[in-house]
Length: 118
Image (cartoon, rainbow, N blue to C red; front, top):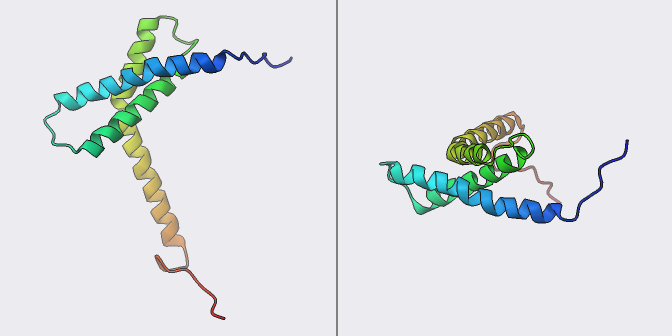
């Protein structure tokens, strides 16, 4: 079997879909933020909307070919954008914990590297 031929229009299709899915994910997160009574900073809002947009875009690409209904695909993209920050926060906390465990295993004290004096 040979690989499928590379279609030069695939890049254009991905970019067009990204331009559709990014705003859907960001809008889902914006709606969630506007409905919240929580006080938040501008940086927090931007970070959450960025993660929501990227996650929605990835889910949109991943569901291509699996979901034939365009409405269902957009719903999946919106829901992914809505839930993206919790997933991102969990992933960052997990990575931070793993990094701290690795640092604790290190024989060197925190912040101090062995240096050779000449």
